[in-house]
Length: 294
Image (cartoon, rainbow, N blue to C red; front, side, top):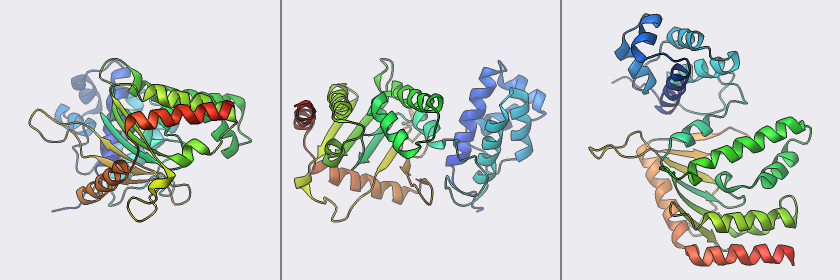
């Protein structure tokens, strides 16, 4: 059997192409006719079910749908990567560095489990917390760009706070994330209050791993996110789950092999079990917030 590589890039590419076809106001049948392919082929492409993607079809679709040049370059990069045997965010010049693949995956997930030992998870960050992080990381970025980054982060949170079918989130945050000051004590106080408030949502479970818990797995575990895409009526996954590991040097890593995903589930469960329960975590968040304003 031919190894067609990771399914992640072609699944994500399919989502983008479907979105842009919809924006262009084209039905599946009409778009397929204009692209001179069968509607079943276009359907498979949009649902990540094509074994090897024809780059020319992706380029033609981008032109037909009016996809901006920089995004078209990213989409064709996803197409080329999907035909490979590994899946990294940083892999030469296939995908522009400013194209965030993770955000697209997160927007499709119905369940998110995350462990963040040092930072507040992005889905819970306040605008001022985001701005302080980005100013430290990119001090020369313009105010307009800083504002855009903040708005992008806040828009992502709608997946959690919306009333209709919000994503379920289970998060464990290291106590260090509460104690390490980002921006100012006031920024941290507002941030921790927001965390405490969001932890009361029925679709959110938030726990704090206290310093006294030590290393639940016997090793230091870095930040990770497990993305789940739901179950079909027949009981099978809509899409295989993905583990996202953010990297600052070698690039972001996406794991989808079942044994890798299961290993991270076990690791997350062990960390969660050693964490404070939801009520104790909420109380600690509010206590530390008060300390920042004392």
